[in-house]
Length: 308
Image (cartoon, rainbow, N blue to C red; front, side):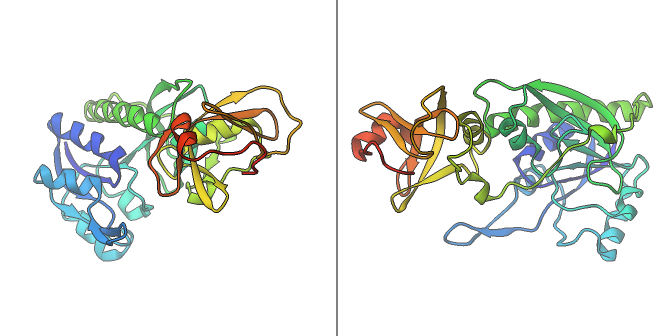
């Protein structure tokens, strides 16, 4: 099938590569404009752009996809289907209705649950046992289109945002190829979403990782996992930022003030929360490497009673 692919991050790359392997003609890859990144402000290509160029696919990087000249340019390719995977811009009606089979989206949740920009991290932070990928027929709403096909993925007890990202990228790529085949042979089915079951999640911002120690230990442990690898859960130790990469929930012990270090020895760093305690297992002090807590304590002892 003749396809225009729209995507930007690593999550989308697997889908693009699987579509190529399946023999589809990707006539254009549309991705976000290059942006300077890091201290040196070097221009960094999006993962999708890098993958497209490696496969000799033309790349288009509009600042605003809804501009008339952008819409007109896309029309010149005569694509039968547009596939979107974490592109990062909202498509106007003119584009949604342009190709023969419309536009389909690879969404990393089981719609109508977790509509929005960051379903993967929120699934972990909210303690979901199962999530998945939905192939949806796009309409003018945000993740409101008909459901074409889904695949469920269970979450491991130690699931992080990063590990779930990888699982769903693989599952989404396979599901997308399957869905395109069913669209081509006319066997795809469309199911309306149940609006009564819809939930929405917002974008992940760095500030979300700031730990509020008055929250229950279970919530904070999920926050740690959900925000790994970015932006990470963090607190303040004296004047420096302390990132927490791995933690364990401990029941009981609610007499100390929330955020207070209640146990600190050669191997343990335990902090009181609003309900229960959190044993920090892997941390990273500002300017240092990520390390197990015992290694951290050897180089940076923390006194019991310290307030984080």
